[in-house]
Image (cartoon, rainbow, N blue to C red; front, top):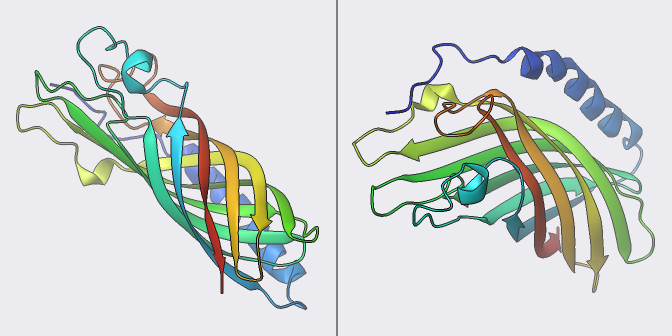
Length: 210
């Protein structure tokens, strides 16, 4: 059975909250004079690298099924140069799935990001970064499940490109790096310090303006 610390370190997450608040305020303040363009973007993605998956956790040789596929959606608003988005993503079997012993896992991530996204005709290249919450879950096949109270902070950074095919519809692709601030799972589940490192995540999705 995995053992988890009684108190998870969240000082890094708390320390960055004022920075995130200031960044959001600057985005909204700088865009006050122009009309925001809202958008929603469902996507599918694939993660590679990091310390998760069958290979990253050292379970590749025990009939482990990797879960590198992510699905999610972002909702946000953009102005001429800046933007803001909220992303929810789900990754099943992020620590691998071993049916023979009932081992399974999943992770939900909730990220709030500030974007720099200049509007160049129908194209918007962008870079982004932000903070949020990571909710991991592990089933060990012996009626054990992580407590919901052990969610923790995380951060992400990345960049990509939006291309609009008309006034309302476009496509989007990007690469993001997502990592936890502190220990969210037992060191028995992830080698090293127990910090979840999803590695790079490549995604593709639709963009619908409203």
